[in-house]
Amino acid sequence: MKKAIIFYQSKTGTTKKYAQEIGTYFQAKQIDTLCLPVEEYRESLLQNTDYLLLGCWTKGLMVIFQQPDNIWGDFAKKLIVPKSTKVALFATFKIRSGSMFKNMAKCVNHNGSLSFPNLKSRNGKLSEKDKIVLDEFINN
Ligand SMILES: Cc1cc2nc3c(=O)[nH]c(=O)nc-3n(C[C@H](O)[C@H](O)[C@H](O)COP(=O)(O)O)c2cc1C
Image (cartoon, rainbow, N blue to C red; front, side, top):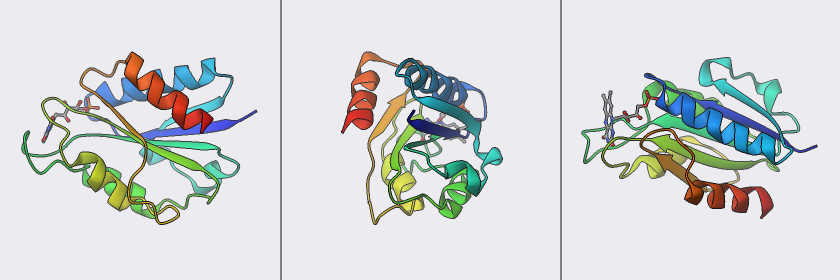
């Protein structure tokens, strides 16, 4: 059975909801999935993980300077991701996600990648478009 871990940082619950919807979608695909807040990260959890999804809320000046919160940035920078694990990013936002994914990717050290598959939501609900992104992530 394939294994996925979803780590999220959420202040008011929207990103947590999105993470859980992503988790439910993975489980429906018969993937053994854990969904945890970033505070619960331990290096051993990533052993034998096929898919790692990292999510955060968007922090910025609404239309410019979007970046992950420091709590997420510090978490992502210390991650030790096995080379064979596939990584994707997700974020919730209100108005504009702008530079969010570029700045999230800068915190993740994984096989020299500068960008990762990503999905975003205003309300924390998984859209049909998100499902296409996730299907591609799972299958390719
Ligand atoms: C300090 C602060 C800055 C924010 N900056 C932005 C922003 O630049 N762009 C945006 O679209 N939403 C911004 N938001 C909205 C949040 O990213 C959005 O409400 C998010 O879904 C909250 O996630 P959570 O419920 O998981 O905490 C900001 C919220 C806060 C509290």
